[in-house]
Length: 128
Image (cartoon, rainbow, N blue to C red; front, side, top):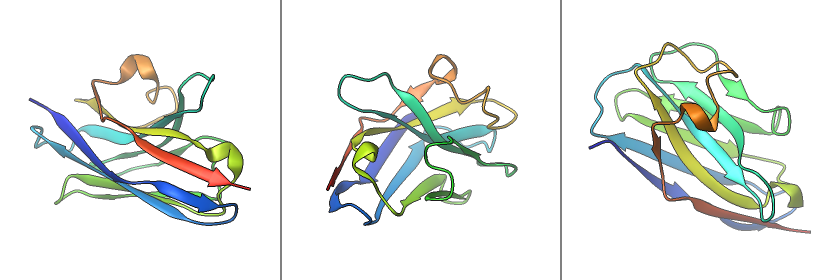
């Protein structure tokens, strides 16, 4: 059974930084796109960032470009999200997600309907 285990998150003030981590188990191939979606209270879930374990272009939403950095470790089957210059509007529950048996992480591929496995979510709270 494929599972995603997340860690990280927390609460910081505006301008601060946080890191999220996510490891996949039960899937040993590199043909997986992993990353995060987030959902703020009263809003729809949105894609944030994604990386293909097999290498290639990264995906970032316009809202986080230049502030968030996603990285991957193929050996550890993990992805990491470094979040800098955080804003109150980044407050949300961040869900690690994986699209299995795929060719990459293009924006069209990083959608809820494509996700095969979800993590339980990590709370990120940014105070002003």
